[in-house]
Amino acid sequence: MADLAKLVEQLSELTILEASELKTMLEEKWGVTAASGGGMMMMAAAPGAAVAEAAPVEEQTEFNVVITDVGPKKINVIKAVRQVTNLGLKEAKDLVETANALVLEGVSKDKANEAKTVLEAEGAVVAVK
Image 1 (tube, rainbow, N blue to C red):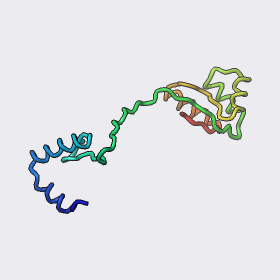
Image 2 (image 1 turned 90 degrees about the horizontal axis):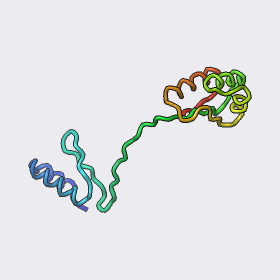
Image 3 (image 1 turned 180 degrees about the vertical axis):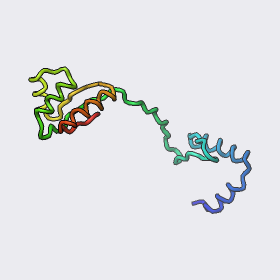
Image 4 (image 1 turned 180 degrees about the horizontal axis):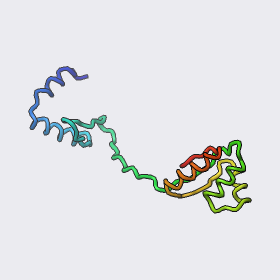
């Protein structure tokens, strides 16, 4: 194993040009790229390790509203389901009596949060997924 203290001392003596050349050599050797930030930061990977690029995170645009528990006020929850959907009384009742009932599917974040607020006000436990 290398003497780390000696290595730190040697790296500290590098000029900016030498540090830049070292960065380029390490990028080629390890198959990585240096991250820019405050000072010189290098992404290090174990030699021979595959480095995967981070996939861009897509913001979720469609949400599902699910009743996980009806709570003690079942009739009020049925009314709330009718309010946030266009279901009839029987369909809303059947939906509420179903475990993990999907109330709304593929709706906007605002509409999902609005439905969640209405349903939770009547005692239901709601998840937005």
